[in-house]
Image (spheres, rainbow, N blue to C red):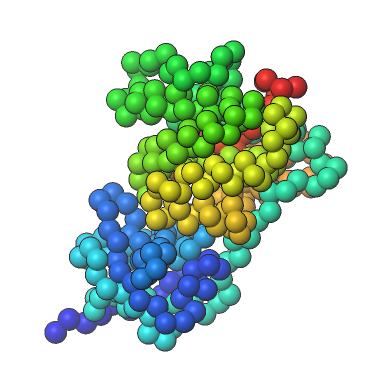
Length: 327
């Protein structure tokens, strides 16, 4: 006779708690090499994560050994809510947290008088990325892209010292990012929408690298709207609306809800909250602010280098492009 394992969830996020607040029925979604998802009948996923820094919108934090066990369960297995538990088949019973969920709400709108201080913080983060980003990540390409005088889709020079996967990413990304930023600076929104659609899915996985670049760009343009306002006259929010809606038409379920949560509801993951805190901390000591930003970037890259490179490249792109081509 099979006896189900009882495991307590370690935490959850506001949108995940709201989704599980009433009757809930879903299925286990498994893909090789990816974290499991629970997807309800409306197609909305619950993202199962194994540590607090990975917690984000629709996130449920579970012990790592439980996630490993769930990877071995049958794909498409039924899951349902029973009281304060979620049953995954007859094998696993997850006890939902009774504590208040973590609030993922975060506004990237800068204070009216904060441009100079924000610029210093973004410069500190950008300097670290330009100097320290691992080769092959999207953030390691930003310096080369900024040096271009023509905003065309010619790829960056090949790097035979990189892996085949990183060489392909470099080739594809450079053909999209330079014309995308150039089109934004010149107000060519039809091209922006086309290139944003082509970014969707770049780099594969549940939350593709191209999508993560756009996620970072949402935060970065809200922090530094001068990029479009002072170059093309475009306003940040309509631009982001058209970019995000172009991407979500072609991406994964997790990426779609994450982008919508960030753009529409200002819901962001734990790492983005930590970045915001480091960027806007009130310390009067410049070295403390610099060290906090650098520590956060180092930890993010150590945990997930490709994803960190894509997200942070998108975040600093509006600021760096503005400094290079507009100021």
